[in-house]
Length: 488
Image (tube, rainbow, N blue to C red; front, side):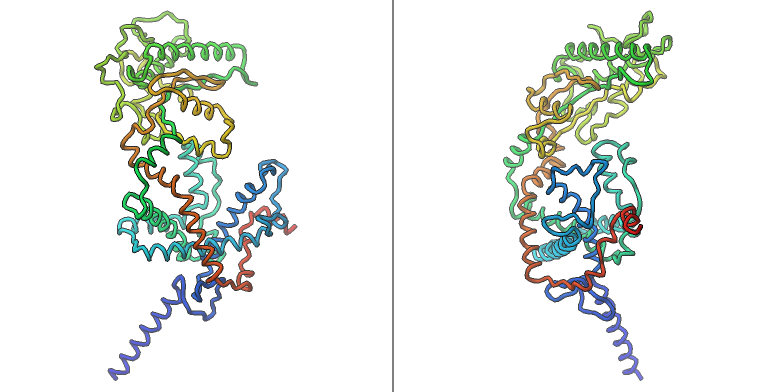
């Protein structure tokens, strides 16, 4: 009886092992399941291919735009005709399927290279990665787009992104399990670690220090700026009083900022925080006429010390603690995401503050920012053309001498800017500038290498079951309004 019992236990363990192997990403079990593709004779879970169908479908819009620069895809009368459009000489959905196969094969190229180089995630990274992917599965598919928009333009841009369905709601009905989703997402983390294993500081082909520093200085501009928005001088709802105030305000704001700039002259003699404090003080509302102190014509009182004088305590001396340094807490750094703190842009209980209880409207507050802009990224598609005022300002800054203030203005804003040493923030260099520059320098070569390995794998080791692929039509990912239009 003991032998029979042991045989039963062995059989159960074997059955469990068989079940586990059948649920793996790649396995040889077939039973009732069918597979879109195999790699070197091994089945690939179809969910991984279907997931990449969705990515390829989204990518098709970008590729079409690149291949058809004369087509205005943003025009109101433009319609993306999914059934007739061709990409790279192929019907749209044929291109999507081929691209999905390539993206899937790339995942296994990365997997193979990751293992061969003996790489592995630390426990802390693995835990973070697993938690993040689990949250992504239940997160809206446009969440990342919203986060990126907020990081680039400000928190307000987050609300401009339209939310609809979660990854689970989109992919699970299409045949993508969480395990397939996770396997594909993990590949992105592995690809980043693989890149670092080649070109990182401890990699096999590290980027020389002088190379990345020279590239960064050539393609970036770092500056500190203080600016304020001007009042609109025309509009349907504006009367003569509104127009008169706007014109007086704009004139006074320009003259006052120029006065402050001339007083402090160079960034070494003052902090932008002091200029911001003085400017924001005159932006406070006069309780008598309800205009900013900058434009009001009321009789000044003994407490109205907002306008700087020769004896103004706000004027720093050579020994003034307000003189900016790389470590100065009073001056925002690159890590401040270009957003001033309450202490930077707004005066506190200073004696020069006209009123203690009035706040400054954010649209006219003089904000201090310090940031670095990549000129190559901004003008990559239009190297000979600058199409907006901010772009023109960046070019102007890149041609300015270091450490000297300059006044700027356009129809909507006025301000002061100073160009800083591009690599002057040592902490920022190590935490952000260096890693990003290494990616800029080596990403193209790394991408070419992965594409070559992927093409070799697709051409020599990938087999597609066209009958199964036909059952997983990428049209399932068409926008709902398109599907309804077709059905009418």
